[in-house]
Image 1 (cartoon, rainbow, N blue to C red):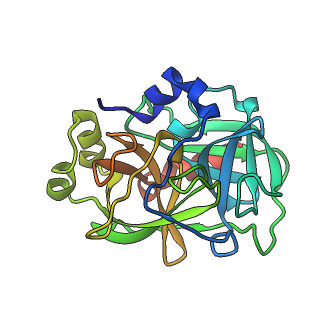
Image 2: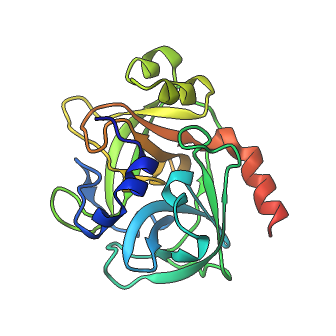
Length: 250
């Protein structure tokens, strides 16, 4: 049965309290390697998504990662390699979801932090990649339970492709294909011979290459399924909305 990120969260919120497999096929990494990564939490207790620091006041994520709860219910943990270790916690002041987000396309959001983020060796912003590659190798970063039962920051390598023919061929749902046709997203392809997959609370996981942010994880058509249709939001496609939103609300 095909599951979408938002539907899974709404229908199955209670199971978040239980261990969920996430970032299947990844490996543990240190936050010092990726100091821009943010863990998005529900009342500091439950990790429900991910994001990337882009300024001292703003974190970018997917709209599906923060679509179901009041803005004040969310907190953000920074500067930690493990969700349950010591972290720098910040309250969410407001969340701006793309006004055209309805569950599949336009799956992007900005989190405004209360106050300003204090930068350090383990907390740094990342720049947004401005190019529009048809294919690029990227590292996806996400916190949370996984097949090894850890809550460590985890990375996995993917090739992101946006070619209409090759990418759409991997997808089943018309609404998923539409994200690609609109040039708003990438398909995620794992390295040959590997098994990787994602869960709904991988939403917002940054995908980076050469020190720049190119995408945030949006959804998997088959939640937890390996090597199947998954889509990430192409951040550069929303550069205008990002700049306008931050300027108007600074």
